[in-house]
Amino acid sequence: MKTYTWKGLFFASLLFYMPVIIAGLILGLLSELLAVAFFLHIIWHYLYLKKLNNWLWNSKSTILPDGKYEWEHAFIGIYNLQQRLRNRRKKLARMISRFREGAEALPDAVVVFQKGGEIIWCNRLAQVQLGFKWPGDGGENITNLIRNPDFVNYLKNEEFHEPLGMISPLNTEKFLEFRVMPYAQNQRLLIVRDITAYRQADQTRREFVANVSHELRTPLTVLQGYIEILNMQVESGTPQGKAITVLDQQTERMCSLVEQLMVLSKIESAPTIDLDEQVDVAALLAQIEDEANALGEKKQLTIVFNIDNQLGLLGNEMQIRSAMTNLIYNAVKYTPVNGNIQVDWSRADHGAYFSVTDDGDGISPHHILHLTERFYRVDHSRSRDTGGTGLGLSIVKHVLTHYDSELLIESTLHEGSQFSFIIPESYVIE
Ligand code: ADP
Image (tube, rainbow, N blue to C red):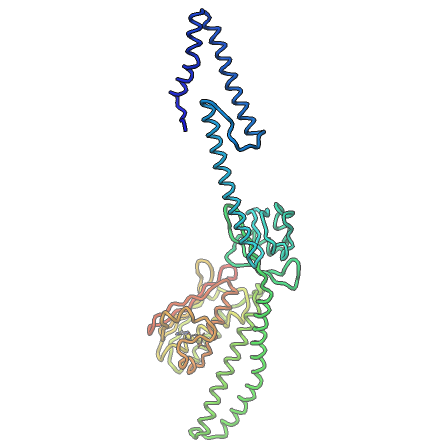
């Protein structure tokens, strides 16, 4: 293609004006002929400008209009620009339709909306599960359609790392999980999943565990009673005496297992903390200190409690007691004779700090990640000897999730361990 240059423009003008100038000089009418030539030149440009305007605004044709000299160049330039835009638009449309096809294939409701809440698009399941209408609800604010205050606050607080569980706005029998993700620039992607079946299964499991543990308590108490009577009647050292000692130990183990299972299901089924209850942690730890000293007496453990007496918590005393006793009793159980244990309850930068440090058995790193799983024990026989159930740390983890906290475990094999957590400021009272 011919490129347009100043030189080209100069020679084209020269070609047009030179005959006019020569004729003007010969005829002695230079200025008149030049004026006519200028006028014709302007008309010529005006006609092409009109052609361009017609093509841009009135014509639907994509065929390039004819042009001469610089106008030909301008037409080709505009045409190329148009083609590039058209291709880009096609590419974008293909991308959007691929995204929509993908979102339609998902088993979840999907809604794309602006940071301010205006709905940009939703898939078919969003229409079924949330009652949205498409395209009618396009541009509508999402909080006008889902008015639940929990959802409105969830969007407002912009803390999307945890999903929001909520009863369906259309059917109170259904439970939905809402997940919001920042998406593109200033947009949000909402994914809503129906978790009713999962919740029901989880509820059934919890109820089953709670019922079985409860039902086992009575026969176990009866067994323990008879074993106690038999224990008094047989002589120790005899085969019968040994058998009854084993029976006694095993029923004791079953009792603590049932007890721990009941605590765990109680904690699991109470997901929200009642912030009206004030827990005197110092008094609680004073009680636990006596119990820990009694437990550790045989092994001559040195147990030191450093307690901030002013520091209390809002929440459930049973749960806090469970978390703290499990960690302290574990230290007593897994620290050998003459060992040292230190319990700290103090102020931290962003809340209250609790830690139990011992110079006991320690735990090798590959076990640490699994310690809070139910029934996980590092050494089954050792744990059995100490009356362990493998549920203690699982209870601690559950309690701490209610307080938006987590258990930190640092341990070196044969050197000792530290179990600690920080309860956030919002639960702390002084
Ligand atoms: P258990 O009832 O068996 O003690 P836990 O859930 O309380 O169950 O603890 C899980 C495992 O973690 C225990 O079996 C034990 O091996 C290990 N453990 C817990 N606390 C300590 C500790 N202070 N020192 C060494 N090992 C520990």
